[in-house]
Image (cartoon, rainbow, N blue to C red):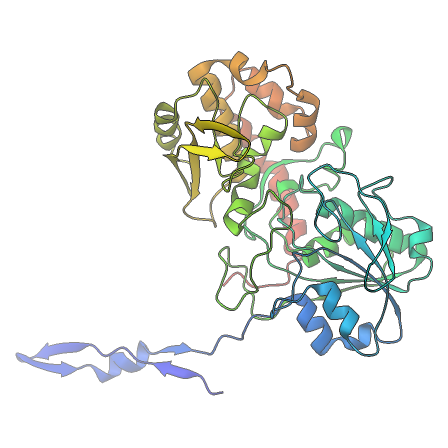
Length: 419
C-alpha cells in the first residue's frame, strides 16, 4: 500500500485577495504512512519464526493473560499448530490456569485435556528443576508482565533463563506490551534484600518489555544462552492500549485493568502496611487508598499541591465486596503516563500521610511488616528515610545517579522505537 500524502491548505491574502500558498503547501506536506497492524509476539513467532520451534520438544511458561490477537491463549495456540510438540507447561504465581490467589502455593498437575505435565513455579519450588527441563529442548516464555520488579513474573523469567543456561536449553520469549514502557523509577535492588519480589538488579519500575528484560538479564547475569525474542509487530512503546490490541485479561486478580498496572507501584506499599487500604476486593485495587483515620479532601489538596509529574488525585468514596464499609478514598489518576513516576508517587503519599496524621498511624498497625516493605522496595533506605521525616524529593534525589547508570545498560536492550 502506498503512503497517503496529507496536505494542509492555507489561504493567504495578497493585495487583499485570498490565495493559496502552494509553495508552503509543499514544504508543510505531511506523510502519513499506514501503520502496521499490531501483533503480539506469540503471533509473530508462529507466523514468521515457526522454524525456531519445529522438530523441538517444547515447554511453555505462560498463563491465561497471554493471548493471541484473536483472543486464543498462547498455550492453546501452540498446542494446535501442526508439527509442533508441546511437551510440558509451567505456571508462574497464580498458576498456568490463573486460578490461584496472590501468594497461594500450587502443586504440579496433569493438563486435563492435553495430558501433559503442568509444572508449578509457585509451590514447593519457585525455580525450575533439572528434572522439569530434562525432556525439553526449547522453553517458550509468554507472560503479560508490568515491568515492575515486585511483580513476580520477572523473577520467574530470571530463574528460567538461569536454568536454561545451565542445561544448554534454548529460550524463546514471545514479547508483549507493558504499562509505562518509557518510565524508570525507584531504587535499584540492594542485594541484601533480594527475594522473590525483588531479584533483578533493576529499579522498581524498569520500563522494559519481557523480551527486552530477558536480553538485559542475559547480559547482567553473564549467561551463556541461546535466547531469541519474537518481537511484536506494530508496537512503539505507547503507554496506552491501542486499537487492534487483544482484549485485556488480568494477569492476576489484582491487576484488573491496564490502568491498574500503571498505578500498581504507587500503592504496592499497602501489601506491607495494612493501616492503609488500597482498594483490595474492589474494581479499583491499587488505584485508590484510604484509612479509617484519613480524610480524603486534605490528602488530595496536599498531594495535588506537590505537583507530581503526570498524576492527579481525586476524592473517591468506594466499597468492597468484603465489607459494608464505605471508604473515604483517594483515587490516583495517571494523566501523563510518559512522565508519571509511580514509585516517587508512593513515597509522596506516605510522606503526606505521615505529615497530616503522624508516623504512628502509618506504621504502628499490629500486622505491619517492615521487613516485607524493604523487600518490595529492594532496600531499607526508603523506610528509614520516611521514618526520619524526609520528603519525597529528598528520597528520590538519591535514586538519580543509579538510575542514570541503569538506563545506559537498558538502552542497549530496547527493541522498539519510542514514537
